[in-house]
Image (cartoon, rainbow, N blue to C red; front, top):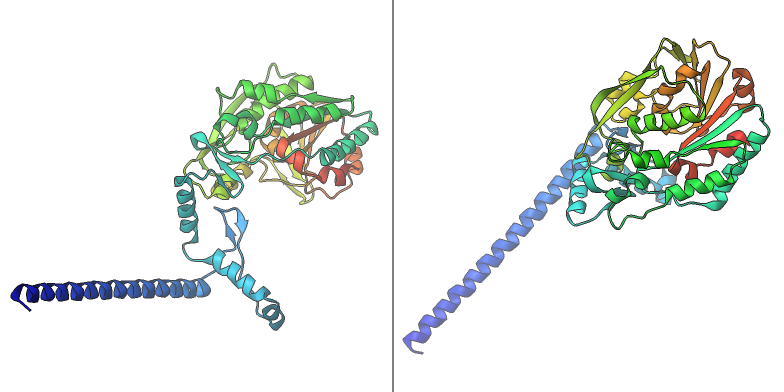
Length: 399
């Protein structure tokens, strides 16, 4: 073996030794990384187990799983392990940050549907439109028709509001599932008894879509501006004398992040909540009937300290709320409603002796008795399209 071959062998030997050293170093790094991750998982899991549990996630707007109770039957059935997994997932330390990070990654890679919500343009998050179910909707309409025919002494009106997916459809992502809510609402109206006066809210809202913010970016509700446009249509149809009543709007918070931001785990935008009130001498008192609680205001300012700031209107949804006024009138309005009506009612109360708000999703009383007791002369069915198409609680109350 000559000198050159010796040098070559020595170089190869050093190279092999370098490769082995590098490989050993990489293996050591992998082992250290794995140990660190295991240590973190153990630490976080232990911290989760001994830490104070949270009962509710405001960001996700839902109750969190609580520490499961051990029993042999639960262990044998596998329920204990399932409940433990849910508990650790919900109570995991730093979970809120992980949810936000996951959403950011989803959006970065082009995903525009997250947990049933669509991520649209201009920071809008959209609730998925409800599919029109002809059989389900017809049953609800049949209930309303039968009720109306048996109460010919009560003037009846219906106003169904379109959702943001209809009025702001061009803000939705391309892959979003759409629905022609205008056509759906017209179909519902066509099935109604002729004695029920229908009120078109689609056209006036569509006309104003570029002039006003009609829907919250982070929540499924319409804004007070949209409700005011609807009020004008309702007032005209119900022949309310609004000529001499001025309305003033006040922003009460600029930090609202609603239910859709919770659903999507996206908290980039914040909304402004406004209240619109009439300048009138008519006074009122609010009664929460089932709770037997009275208030001098339709607004609950304490709700501005929580995440769901839309609950500033009446404090949220209740089975029955009565607004008794000082107006010298015999006209009593019952509004059968969902939560869209909550920001609408503060505009309409000065024109009636009493406004009775009934939410069929929570109402368990005798509706006939309520109508007789309050002396109802007018009834307004006020819903958003998604709720009307999906909810069946009207049948349970008005059949």
